Amino acid sequence: MRAAWIDASAGVAGDMLLAALVDAGAALNTVRAAVEAVVPGEVRLERTRVTRAGMRATRIDVTPSAHDHAHRTWRDVRRLIERAPLADPVRTSALAAFARLAVAEAHVHGTTTEEVHFHEVGAWDSIADVVGVCAALHDLAVTDLTAGPVALGFGRVATAHGELPVPAPAVAELAAEWQVFAGGEGELATPTGLALLTTLARECSPLPHLRLERTGVGAGSRDTPGRPNVTRVFLGTPVPATTVDAGGEAVVLETNIDDLDPRAWPSVLASLIEAGASDAWLTPILMKKGRPAHTLSVLCPSQGAEPLRDAVFRLTTTLGVRERPVRKTELHRGWTHVDVLGDRLPVKVGHRGGRILQATPEFAPAAELAARLGLPVHVVLAATTTAAHRAALTTGAPTPHTLTPEPA
Ligand SMILES: O=C([S-])c1cc(C(=O)S)c[n+]([C@@H]2O[C@H](COP(=O)(O)O)[C@@H](O)[C@H]2O)c1
Ligand code: NI
Image (cartoon, rainbow, N blue to C red; front, side):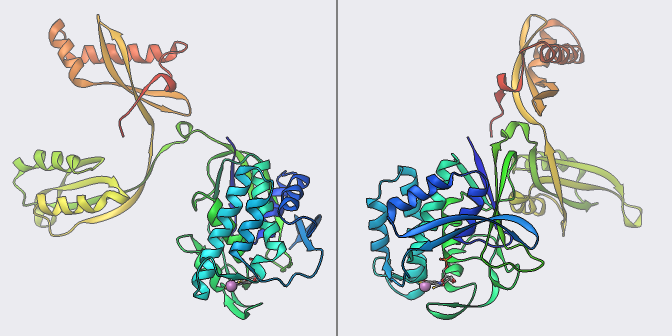
């Protein structure tokens, strides 16, 4: 499996993305053949090496053989792509990107998708950009594409519709649900670039965990001093999730309480765990006026905090809850069984980067075995832990791959 991530933090256009993919290793002749299959004899694709604000980049110039002022409908473009001898994934992606462009343009111009007339975005060069990008991704065998937030620019731009505000209306439409920011003056993202990115990328995310193979830098037409006008592509092999730390954004809810019947606390803590807290605990404190009291702390995932805020108010006498964000790093967990003292006991195992670091016997079965053998429970727990660690050190068992995953 090969993954690619698009850095559109300086903007994106169809030709910039195509150039970045070619710079990352996509074969230009393969891209040319795909474009030629859709619009035979209509465009030439040339590669040049350029600099943008002092940075090396690849530029792909798409030159129509005749001056192209055609107003094509989505139906025209769809027919061209459908009839072309393209690899199936290339055709499917190109149709999907153009369909998204058609829906956005139709919405902006107040017409139907079938009737919408493309001006610049239906010209040969946009068709070449769309088909070329899909062919380049296919050539690079990219199976998982993601992209970061996109710079859209600000100001005004001259188009076939006249002077438009930036982001242009079609860009604004295509950017829905994506993370965007201005990033600089001028049109930094074009409709074709954004249609490709938002159709083909699975999600907007930071650079994923990759074993990086190559990067590609694709130049835009303008060279703006002080701001490299480029789209970049990072290409690599995804690093399996089990070698990346688990965890994530969490919050700790806290409140100081001096007036709850102390006999209620065990059930409060149990109810908070039941309501979804990762942990809940009490710290004895001395409060104002010398009152003995407790701080109640509740650790929970950021997304699941609301039911727990509610539970704290419902289950205790507090009038307020404070909270702070925390970042959790967790070991990956799984289960294994070890042979100990003539029985087979379950052990919870924590691993990181392919190494087993913790082995914790499940208490209840260990206590049961201790009772059966007439041994103190701590002796059975120690024997089980030792057996688990010994097994982890012995080649082959248990490894993170032989564990039973923890239920989600
Ligand atoms: O062609 C059309 S219909 C068109 C619509 C819009 C709207 O925002 S609506 C904007 N534009 C401008 O044309 C060029 C095309 O760039 P591509 O890279 O997408 O080919 C760009 O300046 C758009 O803002 C065209
Ligand atoms: Ni338009």
